[in-house]
Amino acid sequence: MAASDIDNDDDLFGDPGPAPHALRGLTVVLPCLDEAENLPDAVRYATQAVERCAVVHEIVIVDDGSTDKTVAIAGEIAARDPRLSLVVHSENRWYGESLRSGIAAAQMPWVLLTDADLQFDFGDLEDFLPLALSADLVVGWRVLPLGPVGVRVEGALWNRFLRAAFDLPVRDVDCAFRLARHELLERLDLHASGALVGAELLVKSRAAGARVAEAPVHHKVRVAGRQTGSGRRLSARTFREIAGLRRAGQGRPAGV
Image 1 (cartoon, rainbow, N blue to C red):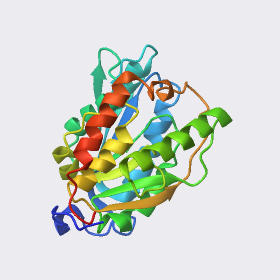
Image 2 (cartoon, helix red, strand yellow; image 1 turned 45 degrees about the vertical axis):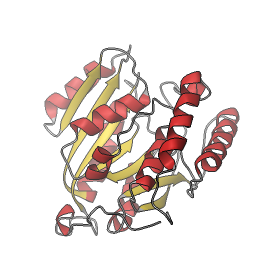
Image 3 (cartoon, helix red, strand yellow; image 1 turned 120 degrees about the vertical axis):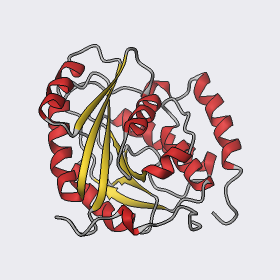
Image 4 (tube, rainbow, N blue to C red; image 1 turned 135 degrees about the horizontal axis):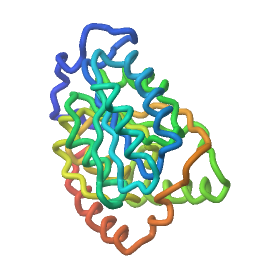
């Protein structure tokens, strides 16, 4: 992909921290919908990983209208750790809006967009760091997607469709483990509601001339809570977003 017009400023990286190429500052955005059982461990694992991978960090939990105890648990955790903040949606606004709320609250030069459902190994973030030296966006690809067979088949077909529809040269459009420069995210004018979150991020990053890299990540089976979002893929809203995103992608720089 073509080089980005986004500066690769050295001040985005601090002196080498516990991990080689540790980021100077990192915000972890954790969208939640009824993740009361998973959230404490998600915050704990995220904290352990980012303390190694960034000089300073913060964690932004975004609750998207949960009906369980997610907000109460998040509030208790935030009261004990000033590096954690909580954004609450009074009603369910879908996944894309949760990510945008987290990005708007982020204060650090790098942002990790992932989920609180414990289906990703936060330790994989360390493998993203060397790629971040020369990339604006690093996206994960699930080495071995896990979960019910039906969900995996649906996900594979949806991923294949997105790659073809938007000519995306990545292995895993929908992998919910993505590291991006905050400055890039602020420029992208993201609007997708849920099903096209990953595709929109990639299409608009490419149109902006951003440098995109990929890294393998380890996927895990959800052990608590419930799967959300997959049933919304083929809604009328999704088809409208596909049409709009195809128009946005037509403006990408030549050669990208």
